Length: 391
Image 1: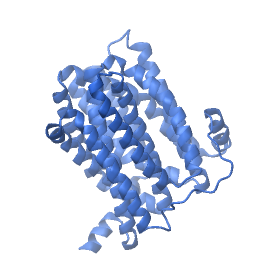
Image 2: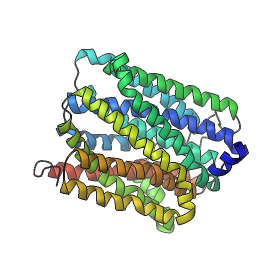
Image 3: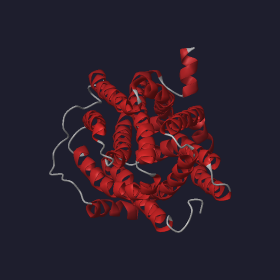
Image 4: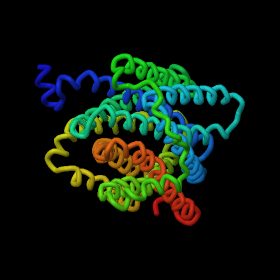
């Protein structure tokens, strides 16, 4: 039975243990992010206002340029597992401090938390996938990354459906303490991986060589020769940039429609929780067959599905703007991004030599992603006062 399951999943016996540990780590990365996302988005929309979302997104984009630069500097000096360990701790402590400040009545904490949740998600995902690329070679990644992503999706499902019950049990604002518990669990898991795989999970600092924090212009200067010479890098750059231009636009339309349809915090929290739970169940089912999709049709065909669906989703908003078109748009684009696009892009990045990955991944996930988000947010700001979000 065990051999049949492993054959169906395309896993080898010597890969099972490291796969389970890594999938469990992604479980905590995703589950903690889902709890914080459900809380932060609900609190921001109801306690601060949807009209401020484009401005907050613009500020968030600019801030992230600097944060990703700092993270790239740390990645050149420390092992990814050690940075992720400390990041878990910092995220939990910062969110706890925000929870303690809620009784003070400071409304500024809601846009701050709204920005922090996206920063935490970006940095944790960046460090996790960088670590995964170090643990698995390119051939293993093609088989294992879709299954590995399934561990994260299970975390999203469990935490999403559990959010309303935890809100009733501990009260809405105390969800931030639940987030603290999940980040501490993630940090403990990294320590356990370090003991289980001491030769892989290097715990010491990387060799120092005079590295320093790079500015955006310095990052562009470093990758410019690769951009001129590598067709693969050009492809990955476009695949990273274009979706992030339209993500802020679709998110704004989605949140606008949901905010109009659900007038209370509890109603919106329940909607976000169950909607995202169902969304991730669909993602999990598809993930079980994505590896076979890559094998049958290849990465180029698989990667084409995501941009084609964006065109369909925006057409749905244009023809019938409301919560139902919002549900279709958000569900379809997120499912394709989670199950097909993100694993495929990670596989492509894994094709770069290891010496390039520490430069390419932060540039793509930092500079390129935020440039796309900045452009998308700017498009909203220039049109929000003239047109209804439907247009």
